[in-house]
Length: 356
Image 1 (tube, rainbow, N blue to C red):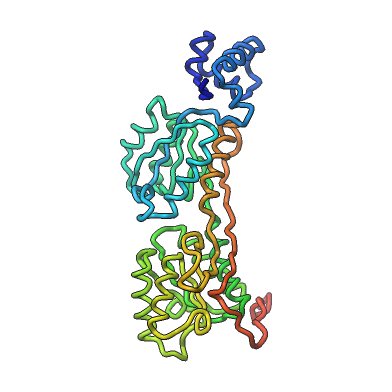
Image 2 (cartoon, rainbow, N blue to C red):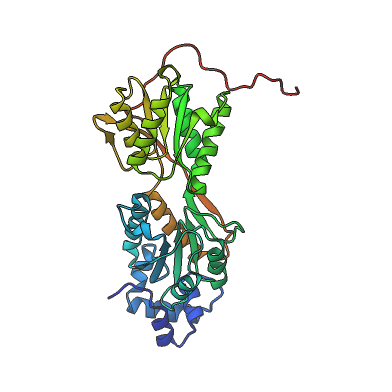
């Protein structure tokens, strides 16, 4: 027998309302014993209770709204893998997963409303959708909905995302701990999440009592493509005297790091002997040529899994406080960053007195 909830079918067979059946299956106390017994017996006959005992997700169908590129691994491997992780997390629950493409900003509100208002749509996830109007509509519709790697400014929707600011800070702090004091940051700032990473990097510079000079320490790319990063670094190397080169480059993604390494190699520089390279990503490329990549891995597969867990809790406790879950990254140390030995690192305290 199927383990799908079949709330409508249970309601028809028992003569109870859909809301009553839903409350019973959710374990709510505001139902009569007679109603609970009717629903339990019917659910057992339909094979629902077996799934419930194993942590059954209390819905049958879920829609994921995401930018079009998220459905193509070659266009956006990060979002593509997040969607795959959602699918894997839902598999034990026998929940049908559907998809709908929306723009990040200026989304098609009619398309969103048509999809989320379909009777079969019982819940939704918004992956990387930043349009505040869509967030407002999601709240107004009233169906369970949560955000993945995006945020709602009015704090009315639950969300799960990487802690981007802490990720940037942790990556930069690692380079400082390895003795690097001159670091070029190659970042794509196309979205606020990347700006949060830059803010974290700046936090690390301040914590190390180092002055961040945007002209010398930041190079901004329009995309995460290896080819663009290679071209930018090649141009930067051509105009930068060798004596003014930094000792490390922190790249905003694995493919960006690959482009950096190609540009350095073409210029006759070895990694990490002449210059260290580190990535903020670490899930797409394990090595660049013969050099394993040191990286601050951003949680990716974990996003989908935690989103499903959060949705499950929202279904069980719909009146619980709305919250945002920030996932930490993971530092993976390999061979692309060398330690610089020398004088003691500057202490993370500013020269000025506390009351100056």
